[in-house]
Amino acid sequence: MAAKKKPTEKSKKTIKSLDNKKQPAQKKPKTKAVKKVVPDSIPAFRAQIAAKNARHRRRLKRTIRYEMANSMSHGIGAGMAIAGMIFLIFKGIAVHEPLRIVAYTIFGSSLTVLYLASTLYHSLPSPRAKSIFRRIDHASIYLAIAGSYTPVTLIALGGSLGWTLFSIVWFFAAAGIFYKSAFKTGHEFISVSLYIATGWMIVFAIEPLMESVNAAGLWLFISGGLAYTLGVIFYSLEKLPYHHMIWHLFVLAGSITHFIAIYLFV
Image (cartoon, rainbow, N blue to C red; front, side, top):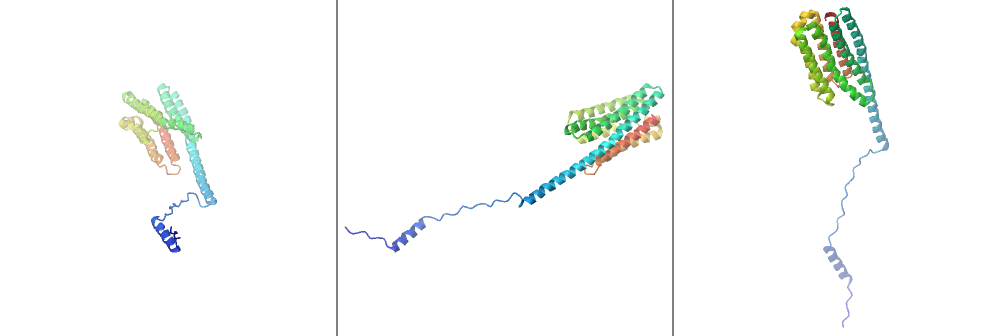
């Protein structure tokens, strides 16, 4: 038998090159670059946290100042309402008219409830308590409107017209109180519209009212109504500093004007 030939160096290279052609070169898998989601350094991260805390402290201090101003303004109003009610009750006692005493008491009590509810709402720190007194505060606005109408309708107007207007106003006030009490997140537009509509129902009895309280008394009532209505504008300007306290001052002006009109002309 013939002996097998050993492969030469040349034949080895040829075989190796053929193997390389048969097997394609493997590509290296691509790796996606991971983006940094944290600050470049710990000091930068701490600076961000410090800035955020500083903004929170400034907002908290500003809120406390605003709420102090709001509670103080209507706290003064509560004291004035109680004092005014006492003056009116003594006036009713002096003329020996039980209806006047009742009407004056309803007027003074409604304003007292309004201002006390507002004072507590703005002064209490508990979120739950604030939520409860916020609804009482808003509902008491309807009470104050109806209470302000009571001496006007029952004493100044009187008769069938006075009692009819008295019943209508108190019906709308009761509906508003129910709406504010039953619905936690009612539409603010509906509430404000009902406030204004109920407050200006007196326009349907302008002539009889003028005959009863004369021109000076009528203008005092109209001025008080305008003060309440203009205050609503500032109530809605939430970006204005102390806008709510300004609204409170307009409410105080309206209450004082109506008290003077009732004390002097009703």
